[in-house]
Length: 463
Image 1: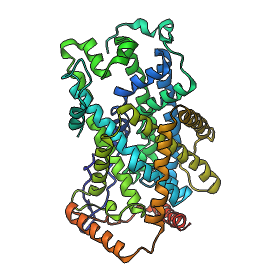
Image 2 (image 1 turned 135 degrees about the vertical axis):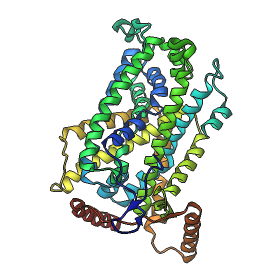
Image 3 (image 1 turned 90 degrees about the vertical axis):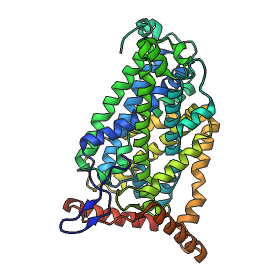
Image 4 (image 1 turned 120 degrees about the vertical axis):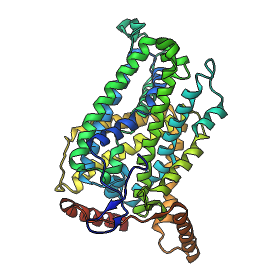
């Protein structure tokens, strides 16, 4: 997927180097489902169960997590068809709140959200491949880092008396952390918004893909957890280093090797999907002038943003060497939810600032308000329960403020800085064989929207 675009052809003219509209409804659903079902369902069940203290409450958390993702996706569907630009949250926040807010979201996504998510998926891949080799212990740290680079049993665990048999009394803070662990498994529900400009008929296919994918994933996640709990006891799940491997050993016997192979394939596909969307975020940021211009260039033959892909891979390799999997999940989930909330606040602000703008989809105002109420609860109690993790996340976001004023707002830089930037850009172009995309002739129904978006973007940057 990350390199799947082809070079466009102009009728009666030479080939055009540009991102192509080649993502139909089927591919759009595959992007959402493939990005959500990557590694989360194979690692988050342990974290959710650990913080909830019972099987029944853990299942409730999973169902509620899908419901919250559905509410958020409805809001993103409205934003996606109202502001039909690639870049997702970043493009919407920049359009509504201006350059600084958009840059801070971009900064946190490039430094933390996507590299950390990719690192967790890669580590999950390595742990599941190595677990059969080290069945009775945790796979060696160096080995996992190097590699990174349906039957019912024990059904009594799901009866009410067993399901809500608490071995610990969860506090509100524990429930918030359980939601953070579960929300990591659902992360990716907004990724189609990052490639809106490559989507065929986005005003129809974007909401359709969301409405198909989110309920399907929620169904799969809930019944996957039911399968886990019917095959093993809560204690066995909590003590397992690789939940799906233990599940396979319980049910499949000699064929248990199928589970680590399947998980490895799933996580490998998840990495591909994350790289596909995260590189488009870097591409969109560079196109708006918030990242180096080299990241806005695409390969002359494959029309793929090679420099942006390389930056994402490098950041992931660095993050992979820091922290354990569950700490990384808390970091990325907190910052993810912070960005989701700011974006959905933007939906309400846009309703107030531009009430007459054309909205092919307009959700009931109760939907974003309900999402934001849950969002506020989650953030407040997450900060209370994990002040260090959340504080570090906020500090990382705020470090983008001086970077914005030095790199973006400060226009009259010394000539030596400009010459150095030009040299690095030229060197990068030669190395990656990339050029700026060539703007094509927009479709007739998109011309007014495109012009209004450009004018609004320029106005917000001036402010």
